[in-house]
Amino acid sequence: MTIELNLSDDAPWKKRYRAPGIAWTKIAANNPERGLLCCNKDGVYQLYAWDTVNNDLRQLTDEPAGIVSGHISNNGDSVYFLQDNGGDEIGHYVRIPFTGGAAVDITADLPAYASHFFSLSASGSALGFTAAAKDGFQILLYNNPPVGEPIFSYRTSSLSAGPFLSHDAEIAIIASTEKTGVAELALAAYDIASGEVIAELWDGAGSGILPARFSPLAADMRFAGSSNASGFHRPFIWDPRSGQRLDIQSERFGGDVTVWDWSPDGARLLLHQVHQALHTLFIYDIAQDRVNPLNVPPGSGGAAGYFAQNGNVFLHWSDAASPSGLIEIDGATGDYLRDVIDLKSDLPESIPWRSVTYRSGDGTPIQAWLATPPGEGPFPTIVHTHGGPTAVRTNAWSPEAQSWLDHGFAFFSPNFRGSTTFGYDFQHAIDGNLGELEVEDIAAGVNWLIANGIADPGAFLKTGASYGGYLTLLSLGKRPDLWAGGMAMVAIADWTLMYEDQAGTLRGYQRSMFGGTPEDKPEAHKKSSPITYARNFQADLLVIQGANDTRCPARQMKVFEQKLKDLGKSIDVHWFDAGHGSRAIEQNIEHQELMLRFAAKALS
Image (tube, rainbow, N blue to C red; front, side, top):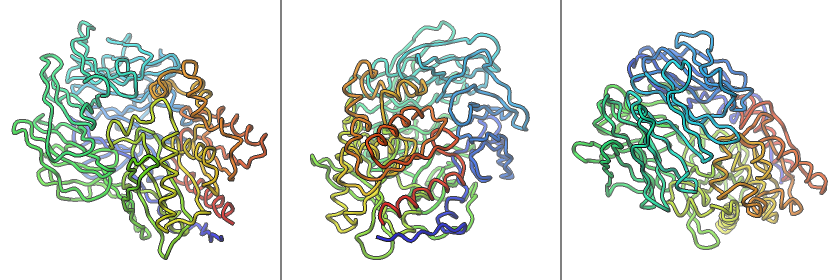
Protein backbone atom coordinates (compact mmCIF):
# COMPACT_ATOMS: atom_id res chain seq x y z
CA MET A 1 0.00 0.00 0.00
CA THR A 2 1.37 3.43 -0.96
CA ILE A 3 0.49 6.46 1.15
CA GLU A 4 1.14 9.75 -0.66
CA LEU A 5 2.28 12.28 1.92
CA ASN A 6 1.76 16.02 1.65
CA LEU A 7 4.41 17.54 3.92
CA SER A 8 4.65 20.96 2.27
CA ASP A 9 4.48 23.99 4.52
CA ASP A 10 1.10 25.00 3.09
CA ALA A 11 -0.44 21.53 3.37
CA PRO A 12 -4.09 21.75 4.48
CA TRP A 13 -3.40 19.67 7.60
CA LYS A 14 -0.69 22.11 8.72
CA LYS A 15 -3.05 25.05 8.21
CA ARG A 16 -5.52 23.39 10.55
CA TYR A 17 -2.84 22.84 13.20
CA ARG A 18 -1.92 26.54 12.93
CA ALA A 19 -5.50 27.68 13.48
CA PRO A 20 -5.41 29.44 16.87
CA GLY A 21 -7.29 27.69 19.64
CA ILE A 22 -8.80 29.04 22.85
CA ALA A 23 -8.30 26.61 25.72
CA TRP A 24 -10.48 28.56 28.17
CA THR A 25 -11.54 32.03 29.31
CA LYS A 26 -12.43 33.52 32.69
CA ILE A 27 -13.93 36.87 33.68
CA ALA A 28 -13.22 38.65 36.98
CA ALA A 29 -16.42 38.28 39.02
CA ASN A 30 -16.32 41.81 40.45
CA ASN A 31 -14.68 43.53 37.49
CA PRO A 32 -16.33 42.15 34.33
CA GLU A 33 -14.30 44.43 32.08
CA ARG A 34 -11.27 42.25 32.80
CA GLY A 35 -10.79 38.63 31.84
CA LEU A 36 -8.12 36.00 31.43
CA LEU A 37 -7.68 33.82 28.40
CA CYS A 38 -5.43 30.89 27.45
CA CYS A 39 -4.69 30.49 23.75
CA ASN A 40 -1.96 29.67 21.27
CA LYS A 41 -2.45 32.48 18.77
CA ASP A 42 1.28 33.24 18.86
CA GLY A 43 2.33 29.61 18.53
CA VAL A 44 2.43 28.36 22.14
CA TYR A 45 -0.34 28.27 24.75
CA GLN A 46 0.14 31.27 27.08
CA LEU A 47 -2.01 33.45 29.35
CA TYR A 48 -3.47 36.68 27.95
CA ALA A 49 -5.07 39.64 29.68
CA TRP A 50 -8.46 40.13 28.05
CA ASP A 51 -10.16 43.54 27.80
CA THR A 52 -13.73 42.28 27.54
CA VAL A 53 -15.07 45.67 26.38
CA ASN A 54 -12.84 46.03 23.31
CA ASN A 55 -11.89 42.35 23.05
CA ASP A 56 -8.22 43.28 23.10
CA LEU A 57 -5.74 40.57 24.12
CA ARG A 58 -2.35 41.25 25.71
CA GLN A 59 0.13 38.45 26.36
CA LEU A 60 1.00 38.06 30.05
CA THR A 61 3.21 34.96 30.18
CA ASP A 62 6.11 33.75 28.11
CA GLU A 63 6.83 30.33 29.55
CA PRO A 64 9.12 28.39 27.16
CA ALA A 65 7.08 25.17 27.39
CA GLY A 66 3.79 27.07 27.45
CA ILE A 67 1.11 27.21 30.11
CA VAL A 68 -2.43 25.84 30.15
CA SER A 69 -3.82 26.79 33.58
CA GLY A 70 -4.33 30.14 35.28
CA HIS A 71 -6.66 32.18 37.48
CA ILE A 72 -7.78 35.80 37.72
CA SER A 73 -8.62 37.52 41.00
CA ASN A 74 -12.21 38.61 41.49
CA ASN A 75 -11.26 42.29 41.35
CA GLY A 76 -9.28 41.68 38.17
CA ASP A 77 -6.03 43.07 39.56
CA SER A 78 -3.97 39.85 39.66
CA VAL A 79 -3.36 36.65 37.74
CA TYR A 80 -2.07 33.42 39.29
CA PHE A 81 -0.45 30.36 37.71
CA LEU A 82 1.81 27.46 38.62
CA GLN A 83 5.29 28.27 37.36
CA ASP A 84 7.06 24.99 36.60
CA ASN A 85 10.30 23.86 35.01
CA GLY A 86 10.02 23.08 31.32
CA GLY A 87 6.45 21.80 31.52
CA ASP A 88 7.10 19.30 34.33
CA GLU A 89 4.05 20.63 36.26
CA ILE A 90 6.02 20.94 39.51
CA GLY A 91 6.83 24.36 40.96
CA HIS A 92 5.22 27.24 42.87
CA TYR A 93 2.17 29.41 42.36
CA VAL A 94 3.10 32.94 41.34
CA ARG A 95 1.14 36.18 41.05
CA ILE A 96 1.51 38.77 38.31
CA PRO A 97 -0.36 42.07 37.90
CA PHE A 98 -3.12 42.09 35.28
CA THR A 99 -1.41 45.12 33.80
CA GLY A 100 1.83 43.12 33.44
CA GLY A 101 4.98 42.86 35.48
CA ALA A 102 7.27 40.51 37.34
CA ALA A 103 5.98 37.26 38.82
CA VAL A 104 5.96 37.03 42.63
CA ASP A 105 6.22 33.61 44.29
CA ILE A 106 3.31 33.42 46.77
CA THR A 107 4.61 30.29 48.54
CA ALA A 108 8.37 30.79 48.56
CA ASP A 109 8.73 28.97 51.91
CA LEU A 110 7.28 25.70 50.53
CA PRO A 111 9.20 22.98 48.68
CA ALA A 112 8.20 22.60 45.02
CA TYR A 113 4.84 20.89 44.54
CA ALA A 114 2.46 19.62 41.89
CA SER A 115 -1.05 21.06 41.95
CA HIS A 116 -4.28 20.42 40.11
CA PHE A 117 -6.52 22.76 42.11
CA PHE A 118 -6.45 26.48 42.98
CA SER A 119 -9.26 28.63 44.37
CA LEU A 120 -10.04 32.17 45.45
CA SER A 121 -12.92 33.12 47.73
CA ALA A 122 -15.56 35.27 46.01
CA SER A 123 -14.73 38.17 48.33
CA GLY A 124 -11.05 37.84 47.46
CA SER A 125 -10.08 37.58 51.12
CA ALA A 126 -8.56 34.08 50.88
CA LEU A 127 -6.88 31.73 48.46
CA GLY A 128 -6.22 28.02 48.64
CA PHE A 129 -4.74 25.19 46.63
CA THR A 130 -3.79 21.53 46.65
CA ALA A 131 -0.05 20.84 46.93
CA ALA A 132 0.96 17.28 46.10
CA ALA A 133 4.25 15.52 46.72
CA LYS A 134 5.24 11.85 46.65
CA ASP A 135 4.06 11.39 50.25
CA GLY A 136 0.54 12.60 49.53
CA PHE A 137 -1.65 15.69 49.34
CA GLN A 138 -1.68 18.87 51.40
CA ILE A 139 -4.55 21.33 51.10
CA LEU A 140 -3.62 24.85 52.18
CA LEU A 141 -5.70 27.98 52.79
CA TYR A 142 -4.14 31.44 53.22
CA ASN A 143 -5.31 34.95 53.80
CA ASN A 144 -4.93 36.83 50.54
CA PRO A 145 -2.24 37.92 49.85
CA PRO A 146 -0.47 34.98 51.52
CA VAL A 147 1.61 36.15 54.46
CA GLY A 148 3.01 33.80 57.08
CA GLU A 149 1.44 30.48 57.97
CA PRO A 150 -1.73 29.11 56.34
CA ILE A 151 -4.97 29.69 58.23
CA PHE A 152 -6.02 26.11 57.48
CA SER A 153 -4.22 22.99 56.31
CA TYR A 154 -5.13 19.36 55.74
CA ARG A 155 -2.97 16.34 54.87
CA THR A 156 -3.94 13.00 53.36
CA SER A 157 -2.43 10.21 51.31
CA SER A 158 -5.68 9.84 49.35
CA LEU A 159 -6.45 11.56 46.08
CA SER A 160 -7.88 14.96 47.09
CA ALA A 161 -8.94 18.33 45.72
CA GLY A 162 -9.76 21.62 47.35
CA PRO A 163 -10.41 23.86 49.12
CA PHE A 164 -13.74 24.88 47.60
CA LEU A 165 -14.44 28.16 49.36
CA SER A 166 -17.61 29.95 50.42
CA HIS A 167 -17.91 33.69 49.71
CA ASP A 168 -15.77 34.87 52.64
CA ALA A 169 -13.98 31.55 53.19
CA GLU A 170 -16.11 30.76 56.24
CA ILE A 171 -16.35 27.17 54.98
CA ALA A 172 -13.88 25.10 52.99
CA ILE A 173 -14.96 21.87 51.33
CA ILE A 174 -12.40 19.15 50.65
CA ALA A 175 -13.09 16.34 48.20
CA SER A 176 -11.16 13.08 48.61
CA THR A 177 -11.22 9.34 47.99
CA GLU A 178 -10.63 8.47 51.68
CA LYS A 179 -14.14 7.14 52.21
CA THR A 180 -14.86 5.76 48.75
CA GLY A 181 -11.70 3.68 48.27
CA VAL A 182 -11.98 4.06 44.47
CA ALA A 183 -11.55 6.91 42.01
CA GLU A 184 -14.68 8.65 43.31
CA LEU A 185 -14.89 11.57 45.74
CA ALA A 186 -16.71 12.23 49.00
CA LEU A 187 -16.98 15.71 50.57
CA ALA A 188 -16.08 17.09 53.99
CA ALA A 189 -16.98 20.69 54.96
CA TYR A 190 -14.71 22.46 57.46
CA ASP A 191 -15.49 25.51 59.56
CA ILE A 192 -12.38 27.63 59.07
CA ALA A 193 -12.73 29.52 62.35
CA SER A 194 -12.62 26.32 64.40
CA GLY A 195 -10.94 23.97 61.96
CA GLU A 196 -13.62 21.36 62.67
CA VAL A 197 -15.64 19.23 60.26
CA ILE A 198 -19.21 20.49 60.27
CA ALA A 199 -20.71 18.15 57.65
CA GLU A 200 -19.90 15.34 55.25
CA LEU A 201 -21.56 14.28 52.03
CA TRP A 202 -21.39 10.90 50.30
CA ASP A 203 -24.15 8.65 49.04
CA GLY A 204 -22.46 5.38 49.96
CA ALA A 205 -20.64 2.54 48.25
CA GLY A 206 -20.90 2.55 44.48
CA SER A 207 -21.20 6.33 44.28
CA GLY A 208 -19.17 9.49 44.23
CA ILE A 209 -19.57 13.26 44.34
CA LEU A 210 -18.36 15.70 41.70
CA PRO A 211 -18.00 19.06 43.48
CA ALA A 212 -18.65 22.33 41.62
CA ARG A 213 -18.73 25.55 43.67
CA PHE A 214 -20.42 27.63 46.36
CA SER A 215 -23.05 30.25 45.64
CA PRO A 216 -21.41 33.57 44.69
CA LEU A 217 -23.47 35.49 47.27
CA ALA A 218 -22.25 36.70 50.65
CA ALA A 219 -23.58 34.75 53.66
CA ASP A 220 -24.99 32.10 51.30
CA MET A 221 -23.63 28.66 52.19
CA ARG A 222 -25.29 26.71 49.37
CA PHE A 223 -22.89 24.45 47.51
CA ALA A 224 -23.60 22.85 44.13
CA GLY A 225 -22.31 19.56 42.80
CA SER A 226 -23.49 16.24 41.45
CA SER A 227 -23.80 12.66 42.70
CA ASN A 228 -23.76 9.47 40.62
CA ALA A 229 -25.63 7.38 43.20
CA SER A 230 -28.28 6.64 40.55
CA GLY A 231 -25.63 5.35 38.15
CA PHE A 232 -25.34 8.70 36.36
CA HIS A 233 -24.38 12.09 37.76
CA ARG A 234 -27.32 14.23 38.83
CA PRO A 235 -26.98 17.78 40.25
CA PHE A 236 -27.73 18.87 43.80
CA ILE A 237 -27.59 21.93 46.04
CA TRP A 238 -26.36 21.31 49.59
CA ASP A 239 -26.04 23.61 52.60
CA PRO A 240 -23.38 22.09 54.90
CA ARG A 241 -24.45 24.36 57.80
CA SER A 242 -28.14 23.48 57.80
CA GLY A 243 -27.80 20.05 56.22
CA GLN A 244 -30.50 20.85 53.67
CA ARG A 245 -30.09 19.21 50.29
CA LEU A 246 -32.02 19.64 47.05
CA ASP A 247 -31.57 16.90 44.45
CA ILE A 248 -32.39 18.21 40.99
CA GLN A 249 -34.31 15.76 38.80
CA SER A 250 -35.81 16.07 35.36
CA GLU A 251 -37.22 13.70 32.77
CA ARG A 252 -35.09 15.64 30.29
CA PHE A 253 -31.87 14.31 31.83
CA GLY A 254 -29.89 11.47 30.27
CA GLY A 255 -26.29 10.45 30.84
CA ASP A 256 -24.21 12.53 33.26
CA VAL A 257 -25.51 15.96 34.26
CA THR A 258 -23.09 18.17 36.20
CA VAL A 259 -22.98 21.77 37.42
CA TRP A 260 -20.92 24.31 35.49
CA ASP A 261 -21.83 27.63 37.11
CA TRP A 262 -24.09 29.72 39.32
CA SER A 263 -25.75 32.83 37.90
CA PRO A 264 -24.37 36.06 39.47
CA ASP A 265 -27.61 36.49 41.47
CA GLY A 266 -27.49 32.91 42.82
CA ALA A 267 -30.91 32.16 41.30
CA ARG A 268 -29.96 29.76 38.49
CA LEU A 269 -27.52 26.98 37.71
CA LEU A 270 -25.91 26.21 34.37
CA LEU A 271 -26.00 22.43 33.90
CA HIS A 272 -23.95 20.40 31.44
CA GLN A 273 -25.06 17.01 30.17
CA VAL A 274 -22.97 14.48 28.25
CA HIS A 275 -24.97 11.47 27.11
CA GLN A 276 -23.51 8.94 24.68
CA ALA A 277 -20.69 11.51 24.20
CA LEU A 278 -23.16 14.22 23.05
CA HIS A 279 -23.40 17.59 24.79
CA THR A 280 -26.53 19.39 26.03
CA LEU A 281 -26.88 22.47 28.24
CA PHE A 282 -29.69 23.29 30.67
CA ILE A 283 -30.48 26.21 32.93
CA TYR A 284 -32.11 25.30 36.22
CA ASP A 285 -34.30 27.95 37.84
CA ILE A 286 -34.02 27.23 41.57
CA ALA A 287 -37.10 29.09 42.80
CA GLN A 288 -39.36 27.57 40.14
CA ASP A 289 -37.66 24.13 40.22
CA ARG A 290 -37.63 24.20 36.43
CA VAL A 291 -35.10 22.81 33.94
CA ASN A 292 -34.87 24.60 30.58
CA PRO A 293 -32.80 23.07 27.75
CA LEU A 294 -30.69 25.48 25.70
CA ASN A 295 -30.66 25.38 21.93
CA VAL A 296 -26.89 24.99 21.63
CA PRO A 297 -25.44 24.05 18.21
CA PRO A 298 -24.29 20.41 17.91
CA GLY A 299 -20.66 19.92 18.86
CA SER A 300 -18.62 20.04 22.00
CA GLY A 301 -18.94 22.27 25.04
CA GLY A 302 -15.18 22.34 25.21
CA ALA A 303 -13.60 23.44 28.48
CA ALA A 304 -16.71 24.97 30.03
CA GLY A 305 -19.45 27.51 29.87
CA TYR A 306 -20.37 30.20 32.37
CA PHE A 307 -22.86 32.97 33.06
CA ALA A 308 -22.11 36.49 31.88
CA GLN A 309 -23.16 39.45 33.99
CA ASN A 310 -26.16 40.07 31.70
CA GLY A 311 -27.55 36.58 32.36
CA ASN A 312 -26.53 35.13 29.01
CA VAL A 313 -24.05 32.26 28.72
CA PHE A 314 -20.53 32.30 27.35
CA LEU A 315 -19.66 28.91 25.86
CA HIS A 316 -16.45 27.40 24.53
CA TRP A 317 -17.64 25.59 21.45
CA SER A 318 -16.12 23.49 18.68
CA ASP A 319 -16.91 20.46 16.58
CA ALA A 320 -14.82 18.03 14.57
CA ALA A 321 -14.67 20.50 11.68
CA SER A 322 -14.30 23.80 13.59
CA PRO A 323 -11.63 25.02 16.06
CA SER A 324 -12.66 26.23 19.50
CA GLY A 325 -14.02 29.72 19.91
CA LEU A 326 -16.01 31.61 22.56
CA ILE A 327 -19.64 32.27 21.70
CA GLU A 328 -22.50 34.01 23.53
CA ILE A 329 -25.85 32.26 23.69
CA ASP A 330 -29.17 33.58 24.94
CA GLY A 331 -29.64 32.71 28.62
CA ALA A 332 -33.32 31.97 28.08
CA THR A 333 -33.31 30.03 24.81
CA GLY A 334 -29.70 29.06 24.17
CA ASP A 335 -29.90 30.55 20.68
CA TYR A 336 -26.60 31.69 19.23
CA LEU A 337 -26.09 35.47 19.59
CA ARG A 338 -22.51 36.22 18.54
CA ASP A 339 -18.89 35.19 18.44
CA VAL A 340 -17.32 36.76 21.52
CA ILE A 341 -13.78 35.80 20.50
CA ASP A 342 -13.07 34.21 17.15
CA LEU A 343 -9.39 33.76 16.31
CA LYS A 344 -10.04 31.49 13.35
CA SER A 345 -8.96 32.41 9.85
CA ASP A 346 -10.01 30.73 6.62
CA LEU A 347 -9.41 27.01 6.96
CA PRO A 348 -9.53 24.11 4.53
CA GLU A 349 -12.80 22.21 4.57
CA SER A 350 -12.84 19.46 7.19
CA ILE A 351 -14.71 16.16 7.41
CA PRO A 352 -17.34 15.80 10.17
CA TRP A 353 -17.51 12.77 12.46
CA ARG A 354 -20.48 10.51 13.05
CA SER A 355 -21.39 8.54 16.16
CA VAL A 356 -21.60 4.75 15.83
CA THR A 357 -22.27 1.95 18.31
CA TYR A 358 -21.05 -1.64 18.26
CA ARG A 359 -20.92 -4.57 20.70
CA SER A 360 -17.81 -5.59 22.59
CA GLY A 361 -16.89 -9.26 23.07
CA ASP A 362 -19.26 -9.73 26.02
CA GLY A 363 -22.10 -7.81 24.38
CA THR A 364 -21.47 -4.43 26.07
CA PRO A 365 -22.45 -1.58 23.72
CA ILE A 366 -19.53 0.72 22.90
CA GLN A 367 -20.00 4.18 21.39
CA ALA A 368 -17.34 5.47 19.00
CA TRP A 369 -16.65 8.34 16.61
CA LEU A 370 -15.98 7.54 12.96
CA ALA A 371 -14.89 9.64 10.00
CA THR A 372 -14.00 8.39 6.54
CA PRO A 373 -12.19 10.09 3.65
CA PRO A 374 -13.79 10.59 0.23
CA GLY A 375 -14.12 7.46 -1.90
CA GLU A 376 -15.03 3.86 -1.33
CA GLY A 377 -13.56 1.71 1.43
CA PRO A 378 -12.01 -0.31 2.78
CA PHE A 379 -9.49 2.27 4.00
CA PRO A 380 -6.29 2.11 6.00
CA THR A 381 -7.55 3.00 9.47
CA ILE A 382 -6.33 4.89 12.52
CA VAL A 383 -7.73 3.52 15.79
CA HIS A 384 -7.34 6.28 18.36
CA THR A 385 -7.97 6.06 22.11
CA HIS A 386 -8.45 9.04 24.43
CA GLY A 387 -6.53 9.70 27.64
CA GLY A 388 -7.80 9.51 31.18
CA PRO A 389 -9.19 6.88 31.43
CA THR A 390 -11.81 8.90 33.33
CA ALA A 391 -12.54 11.07 30.31
CA VAL A 392 -14.66 10.85 27.18
CA ARG A 393 -14.09 11.54 23.50
CA THR A 394 -16.65 14.00 22.19
CA ASN A 395 -17.33 15.72 18.88
CA ALA A 396 -14.52 18.27 19.20
CA TRP A 397 -11.91 19.84 16.94
CA SER A 398 -8.97 17.56 16.13
CA PRO A 399 -6.41 18.63 13.53
CA GLU A 400 -4.75 15.25 14.11
CA ALA A 401 -7.86 13.40 12.94
CA GLN A 402 -8.25 15.68 9.92
CA SER A 403 -4.60 15.11 8.99
CA TRP A 404 -5.20 11.36 8.78
CA LEU A 405 -8.36 11.90 6.75
CA ASP A 406 -6.45 14.15 4.33
CA HIS A 407 -4.10 11.24 3.67
CA GLY A 408 -6.82 8.70 2.93
CA PHE A 409 -7.17 7.08 6.35
CA ALA A 410 -10.41 6.36 8.17
CA PHE A 411 -10.37 7.68 11.76
CA PHE A 412 -12.02 5.68 14.55
CA SER A 413 -12.09 6.66 18.25
CA PRO A 414 -14.02 4.39 20.65
CA ASN A 415 -15.18 5.35 24.13
CA PHE A 416 -13.94 2.15 25.74
CA ARG A 417 -14.97 0.93 29.20
CA GLY A 418 -13.52 3.27 31.81
CA SER A 419 -14.82 6.29 29.88
CA THR A 420 -17.11 8.71 31.68
CA THR A 421 -20.74 9.65 30.86
CA PHE A 422 -21.87 6.06 30.17
CA GLY A 423 -22.75 5.28 33.79
CA TYR A 424 -21.02 4.28 37.01
CA ASP A 425 -20.78 0.59 36.15
CA PHE A 426 -19.30 1.28 32.71
CA GLN A 427 -16.71 3.68 34.14
CA HIS A 428 -15.66 1.46 37.05
CA ALA A 429 -15.68 -1.86 35.18
CA ILE A 430 -11.91 -1.54 34.73
CA ASP A 431 -11.04 -0.84 38.39
CA GLY A 432 -8.23 -3.03 39.70
CA ASN A 433 -7.71 -4.63 36.28
CA LEU A 434 -6.64 -1.83 33.96
CA GLY A 435 -6.31 -2.56 30.28
CA GLU A 436 -8.11 -5.88 29.88
CA LEU A 437 -11.62 -4.69 29.03
CA GLU A 438 -10.31 -1.67 27.15
CA VAL A 439 -8.26 -3.87 24.79
CA GLU A 440 -11.29 -6.14 24.35
CA ASP A 441 -13.41 -3.11 23.39
CA ILE A 442 -10.74 -1.89 20.94
CA ALA A 443 -10.42 -5.33 19.31
CA ALA A 444 -14.21 -5.57 18.93
CA GLY A 445 -14.15 -2.17 17.22
CA VAL A 446 -11.53 -3.43 14.77
CA ASN A 447 -13.74 -6.42 13.93
CA TRP A 448 -16.76 -4.15 13.46
CA LEU A 449 -14.84 -1.92 11.05
CA ILE A 450 -13.80 -4.95 8.99
CA ALA A 451 -17.28 -6.50 8.99
CA ASN A 452 -18.78 -3.25 7.74
CA GLY A 453 -16.28 -2.84 4.90
CA ILE A 454 -14.79 0.33 6.35
CA ALA A 455 -11.26 -0.83 7.17
CA ASP A 456 -8.58 -2.77 5.35
CA PRO A 457 -7.79 -5.73 7.67
CA GLY A 458 -4.04 -5.45 7.04
CA ALA A 459 -3.80 -1.68 7.51
CA PHE A 460 -4.76 -0.85 11.08
CA LEU A 461 -2.56 1.59 12.99
CA LYS A 462 -3.10 2.18 16.71
CA THR A 463 -2.47 5.57 18.32
CA GLY A 464 -3.28 7.70 21.36
CA ALA A 465 -1.71 9.88 24.04
CA SER A 466 -1.32 9.42 27.81
CA TYR A 467 -3.76 6.62 28.79
CA GLY A 468 -4.50 6.39 25.08
CA GLY A 469 -0.78 5.87 24.50
CA TYR A 470 -0.81 3.22 27.22
CA LEU A 471 -3.64 1.40 25.43
CA THR A 472 -1.64 1.64 22.20
CA LEU A 473 1.29 -0.19 23.79
CA LEU A 474 -0.96 -2.69 25.56
CA SER A 475 -2.97 -3.40 22.38
CA LEU A 476 0.21 -4.13 20.43
CA GLY A 477 1.39 -6.44 23.22
CA LYS A 478 -1.87 -8.30 23.90
CA ARG A 479 -3.37 -8.35 20.38
CA PRO A 480 -0.34 -8.23 18.06
CA ASP A 481 -2.33 -9.91 15.28
CA LEU A 482 -4.42 -6.75 14.71
CA TRP A 483 -1.84 -4.11 13.98
CA ALA A 484 0.44 -2.99 11.18
CA GLY A 485 2.00 -0.41 13.51
CA GLY A 486 1.55 1.67 16.64
CA MET A 487 2.18 5.31 17.55
CA ALA A 488 2.08 6.15 21.26
CA MET A 489 2.46 9.62 22.74
CA VAL A 490 3.42 10.39 26.37
CA ALA A 491 2.57 6.81 27.22
CA ILE A 492 2.61 4.44 30.20
CA ALA A 493 4.76 1.34 29.73
CA ASP A 494 5.32 0.13 33.31
CA TRP A 495 2.87 1.03 36.08
CA THR A 496 5.30 0.14 38.87
CA LEU A 497 8.17 2.30 37.63
CA MET A 498 5.71 5.04 36.83
CA TYR A 499 4.43 5.08 40.40
CA GLU A 500 7.98 5.41 41.73
CA ASP A 501 8.73 8.51 39.62
CA GLN A 502 5.45 10.31 38.96
CA ALA A 503 4.12 13.51 40.51
CA GLY A 504 2.17 13.22 43.76
CA THR A 505 -1.08 14.28 42.10
CA LEU A 506 -1.05 11.14 39.96
CA ARG A 507 0.12 8.73 42.67
CA GLY A 508 -3.16 9.10 44.52
CA TYR A 509 -5.10 8.58 41.30
CA GLN A 510 -3.13 5.41 40.46
CA ARG A 511 -3.76 3.98 43.93
CA SER A 512 -7.47 4.63 43.57
CA MET A 513 -7.58 2.89 40.19
CA PHE A 514 -5.67 -0.22 41.28
CA GLY A 515 -6.96 -0.36 44.85
CA GLY A 516 -3.46 0.06 46.28
CA THR A 517 0.19 0.72 45.52
CA PRO A 518 2.43 -1.54 43.40
CA GLU A 519 3.68 -2.99 46.67
CA ASP A 520 0.10 -3.72 47.76
CA LYS A 521 -1.03 -5.06 44.36
CA PRO A 522 2.08 -6.31 42.53
CA GLU A 523 0.32 -8.82 40.28
CA ALA A 524 -2.33 -6.34 39.16
CA HIS A 525 0.34 -3.77 38.25
CA LYS A 526 2.35 -6.39 36.38
CA LYS A 527 -0.66 -7.74 34.49
CA SER A 528 -1.68 -4.26 33.39
CA SER A 529 1.77 -3.10 32.24
CA PRO A 530 2.69 -3.23 28.52
CA ILE A 531 6.28 -4.18 29.39
CA THR A 532 4.93 -7.55 30.60
CA TYR A 533 3.96 -8.37 27.00
CA ALA A 534 7.17 -7.13 25.35
CA ARG A 535 7.91 -10.53 23.76
CA ASN A 536 4.58 -10.46 21.93
CA PHE A 537 5.21 -7.23 19.98
CA GLN A 538 5.28 -7.77 16.21
CA ALA A 539 4.45 -4.42 14.62
CA ASP A 540 6.77 -1.44 14.32
CA LEU A 541 6.35 1.09 17.14
CA LEU A 542 6.90 4.84 17.34
CA VAL A 543 6.85 6.52 20.77
CA ILE A 544 6.83 10.31 21.23
CA GLN A 545 7.66 11.10 24.85
CA GLY A 546 8.23 14.29 26.87
CA ALA A 547 11.61 14.49 28.62
CA ASN A 548 10.11 16.57 31.48
CA ASP A 549 6.89 14.57 31.89
CA THR A 550 5.98 13.90 35.54
CA ARG A 551 2.68 12.17 34.69
CA CYS A 552 4.27 9.49 32.50
CA PRO A 553 7.94 9.86 33.53
CA ALA A 554 10.93 9.19 31.32
CA ARG A 555 12.57 6.28 33.18
CA GLN A 556 9.76 3.80 32.71
CA MET A 557 9.78 4.46 28.95
CA LYS A 558 13.57 4.14 28.72
CA VAL A 559 13.41 0.76 30.45
CA PHE A 560 10.63 -0.33 28.08
CA GLU A 561 12.59 0.85 25.04
CA GLN A 562 15.67 -1.11 26.09
CA LYS A 563 13.59 -4.21 26.78
CA LEU A 564 12.12 -4.18 23.27
CA LYS A 565 15.50 -3.56 21.69
CA ASP A 566 17.04 -6.43 23.65
CA LEU A 567 14.29 -8.66 22.27
CA GLY A 568 14.98 -7.50 18.72
CA LYS A 569 11.70 -5.59 18.40
CA SER A 570 11.24 -2.47 16.28
CA ILE A 571 10.88 0.66 18.43
CA ASP A 572 11.79 4.29 17.76
CA VAL A 573 11.47 6.75 20.67
CA HIS A 574 11.43 10.46 19.89
CA TRP A 575 12.12 12.61 22.95
CA PHE A 576 10.96 16.23 23.06
CA ASP A 577 11.84 18.96 25.54
CA ALA A 578 8.54 19.47 27.36
CA GLY A 579 6.20 17.70 29.74
CA HIS A 580 2.97 15.75 29.28
CA GLY A 581 2.38 16.70 25.66
CA SER A 582 3.38 19.73 23.66
CA ARG A 583 1.78 23.16 24.04
CA ALA A 584 3.49 24.53 20.90
CA ILE A 585 1.86 24.48 17.45
CA GLU A 586 5.02 23.83 15.43
CA GLN A 587 6.10 21.04 17.76
CA ASN A 588 2.70 19.38 17.34
CA ILE A 589 3.11 19.66 13.56
CA GLU A 590 6.54 18.04 13.89
CA HIS A 591 5.03 15.18 15.88
CA GLN A 592 2.23 14.66 13.37
CA GLU A 593 4.75 14.60 10.53
CA LEU A 594 6.73 11.96 12.41
CA MET A 595 3.57 9.85 12.65
CA LEU A 596 2.66 10.35 8.99
CA ARG A 597 6.12 9.27 7.87
CA PHE A 598 5.95 6.28 10.22
CA ALA A 599 2.50 5.28 8.93
CA ALA A 600 3.57 5.47 5.29
CA LYS A 601 6.59 3.27 6.01
CA ALA A 602 4.62 0.78 8.14
CA LEU A 603 2.08 0.24 5.34
CA SER A 604 4.51 0.20 2.44
